Amino acid sequence: MTEQSSQIKNKKRVADHGEVFTHEREVQAMLDLVEHESFRIDSRFLEPACGDGNFLAPVLKRKLERVKQRYVRSQSDFERNSLIALSSVYGVDILEDNVEACRSRLFGIYDTTYAEAFGESTRADCLNAARTILSKNILWGDALSMLRADGSGDPIVFTEWTAVNGRKIKRREYTLANLLAYQPFEGESLFSDLGEQAFIPKPVREYPLVDYLELAE
Ligand SMILES: C[S@@+](CC[C@H](N)C(=O)[O-])C[C@H]1O[C@@H](n2cnc3c(N)ncnc32)[C@H](O)[C@@H]1O
Image (cartoon, rainbow, N blue to C red; front, side, top):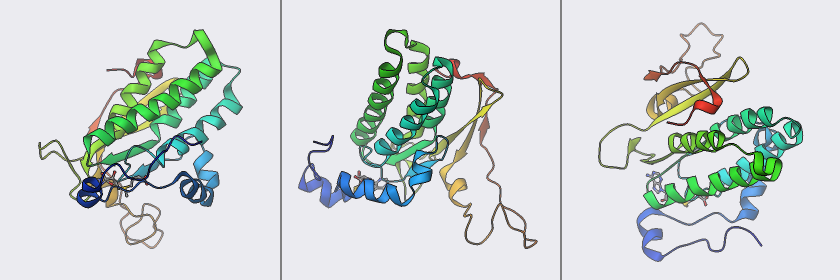
């Protein structure tokens, strides 16, 4: 029995937004094509039409499985690495209810894994940091226009979370449009060795370093 019961919610949503969910069997087969990356704790995944998280949920489960294998003997190492895993998973969807469902599904996976590992000693600060990360990483937007879908006309902005010096996290924000202008395998490349100017995305905002347990807003 899987978490997923049906591949469509209703015909209108299929007609208006092409909302047909991918079956878990296909999701797992596709993730197996990038098996190493799907288990790597800090590899970044972006799903630009994420629905309620049919790809992001198994990616997070794979990463947390690796965190559990490596760090279950130290709660602080588990917390730091599990938050790094969570912070590497990104999604956008044009339907607000899908965004809410995706955040809550990913939070449920995080919360359950953390509780299974540490029972009653789990910390509210860590769970609040997880909620903050999800509120910044899973966004209500239009992946074609790269604007938020709340009618504000604001661009979709994603947060890069980088672990620094053990317990600290550096937060930088980038517009999706700027990030997608960087294509490692075509045209300008960060790793170009042909003399062209390398393309490096510019952050629109940076935050001071913060302890990973103080990420909650
Ligand atoms: C075919 S479903 C796939 C959902 C999920 N990725 C999966 O594989 O199960 C397409 C999803 O894209 C969303 N969508 C449609 N147009 C979009 C757009 N312009 N920007 C972002 N999301 C969009 C729909 O709301 C729907 O959740």
